[in-house]
Length: 346
Length: 285
Figure 1 (tube, helix red, strand yellow):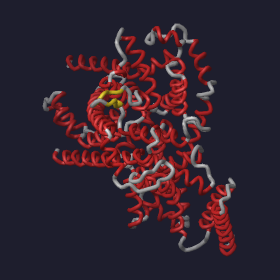
Figure 2 (tube, rainbow over the protein chains, first blue to last red):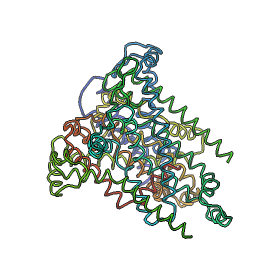
Figure 3 (cartoon, rainbow over the protein chains, first blue to last red):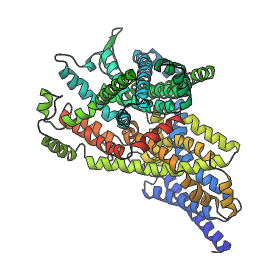
């Protein structure tokens, strides 16, 4: 096709596309509920973009750049950026999920910090995060040492330790609810289910979380341990260092950055824990605190979800979410910077 | 030497024990979905007396109105596959543009994507719903309770990490390759689709696996956007609403859980190495 024809063709395409979009918008503003306007809008957009794409101009490269970035930027804007900025604003209003009537400033934040259940779930999330970081990382590291030693069948161990991590938290949560409520109580005759005692219920979630996540973290430690140069290991062997000394003086310092990665991942993962929490206990059982019943295992993510979806307090839920974000950002950045410093010292 | 050998045997014993402990829940699911409800109450630990009950339970659950396995399986499948295909294509395109234009704007956009990885889903989930509701009203396209909307959302949420991973990889591809193509008369889009995109194969594997596991197992986003009793149900939603309607009917619930686990376990058996490698590489980068 010659250039002139191509140009005319693409220009017609662009104009048609723009017209289609304009007509769709016109339908929208006149309040038409016709379901065709969506199709018209998208078709117009595609037509205009396609026309722009084949338009023979010097700036073709720039057009390609824009068109290549457009899909991700568009979806990113509507799903992350816009809701995020909106969310911060909405946390300072009396929003009910659909519209808000007045700007309330920091009132929601005050209400939130006064409510006992939020403070409690804040603290319990921290407690869980710390315990989970410790238990997941120790388990994972021990498993990784096992899987990088000379034992037979280590590929099988690796695969089986890794498997739980692939199944979703919701499904696993229900399975473990069954195990805690039926299997464990049957195995130890006459015992109560762990999920009925506030402290044991937290332990139960911790067990499942470690069971699920340790295999994943283990694989990262395995990768780190395999990266330790063989000649250094051999040298330490020749020098007569035993297993324990090699581990402490060589392996652990050599994989300091693996520790940073793993600690960061477990920190963020435990802090955001929702699925297991939702499926295993859904916050139960309650605990009496200062004369009030408070759900004992309701982590922050679940607390936010329940405040908004179950109790229909959207503005308050959003406020809690904003604070959740700030805390998560501060804690994870602090953790990374502390670990980075440690790496340098070593 | 002898002592070392004993230690090794000891370690093997621990390995076997641990993998038994780790795999036990899966075995228990299989055992108990092969029992009648009454048998579970009597002994939830013992193997079932006859495996035949498994098939009865399976067919009960598969054909159950509240679970509708094939429908929710295919919904999950469609959502995951379409999201993954679009994610790998669009993120690849965007990452390539961002790498090859060393300008301020490309840095800003890239930093924006990286920074967004810190944002937990809870912060955006509520305004997301209202944004999508407004978008539906404005464009006339159904964004809530539809495939369009949820795939759109997965593109938005998955884009950050995918671009981050792909960006790192594309930086390592020599620019001379593109220059050569350009001299031979290849257009910019041709350069990307014919030269760069095929080269991304190993790293796209990581992107696909990380996003695939996440999208397939995700509960919160579909539960908000599709609703618990909506037209479209993903597998986790189906399991959850099934549990809600058959409280403590453990034989049925565990069979449903088994059905939800099977596809991924089969996949894992066939693509073990790729899956493990993909997920670990994604975490380290």
